[in-house]
Image 1 (cartoon, one colour):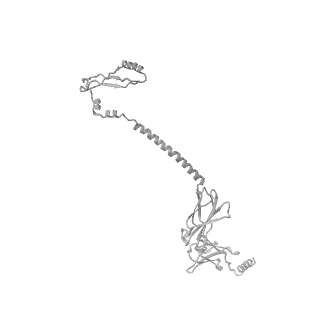
Image 2: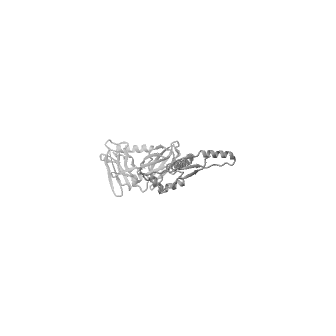
Image 3: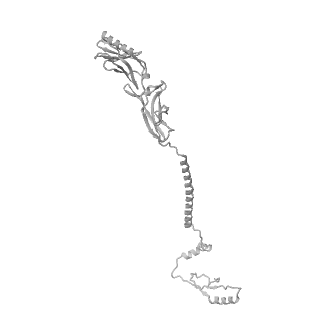
Length: 347
């Protein structure tokens, strides 16, 4: 404190006695994403018309960038990214000038890497993170800052909102990352920063972003077992039902289109004879002479060995009950004479 007061008193004395302009104070470089601004503070005691001149020196060139300005800052963003420069500034009042105040500036090393832009989406129990930038304005164009560094990656820091002390990290070379293995239905917060491993340089952290995880997408075992049992039960019920339904329909169709009964053999032979079929199908002339023959049906006597007397009586009754039946039958002139058919007694 005493030294500061002594320096201040000395500068005031020199200003008052010899008219020497004091040097600018607190000269510093403020460089973020290669946007480089040299800044300084005005002297403690100065005249109202004091101005400043700022410039740079390198191994190849020397130039005053800002001459006789009243502002306390000067933009050096135009300097090549790779290189080492001596930046200088002095105070001026009329014909009086202060000494130069110098600082060394290396843009690629001294610039601050800004924070990237982060977007988070919760999906299937995981957090999907996308990040971009930061960007730099160089030679009137927008460039991704990683374009100027040999190596580049992003570091993701995340934690449960309820436990800020337990912070987990993961690094990636890509512009996206998926945080998996998280607890379902839990709020997680995260921040992202850019890193240049080659220069061992870390960027600023992004704003804190929080989101809630959903279900982790894993089906519980009990649900799997239940679905399996229900599926087996459905199969066991459906397959037999379908089989018996098909069998029933098949039998009904077969019964309708292919009946099980068939005509007697003698009827089949009768129908297969051409003479018979042609005889029934041939047209008949009204003048055709029809001849009808007499058919006598005699019932056969039934014998009973147990009772001779009743048997004799039955025979007499059967003889009295003879029955004559006339059947109209179309025959040709070549047909044979009357026929006699014996029919067994039904009793």
